[in-house]
Image (cartoon, rainbow, N blue to C red; front, top):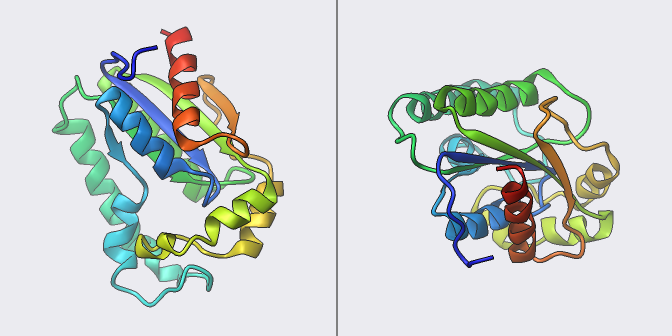
Length: 194
């Protein structure tokens, strides 16, 4: 496969626990496809940067209302102003059973794909517990207001992957894959679904 894949109006939706590699894989995918990376910290960090948080202590419950407002503005822009020809990559930190908050994000992403008539590839990313704990502990994660709780990472690795209930969902274990190799695998699977 060529280093740059030729896709148009494709949406990649990368989901999994914090530390699994969604942002790094998304950056590689963006380089390979010319896609715009719409990572979940795009709507989290405008709020996270304004509150006291350390990546371990649970966030105040009230933080999710303004986060939702920012996310709605981002998604409205994607539905109404972003060119249809653009490929998009979304990231979403989610693990375990379906819950209202994660399903709302998933439904927003799926809704953007539907409104744009885009082909959607959902990628459930998983990782072994100790590798996930090592990744979460990386100090550069704090610069992006990302989670740093190694104990939570170990537990997240043991939980069932979050599944948004969409048929175009594939699973990739990133334990022994580099971010670039994971991105290549996603593109190979996307090519097969064209």
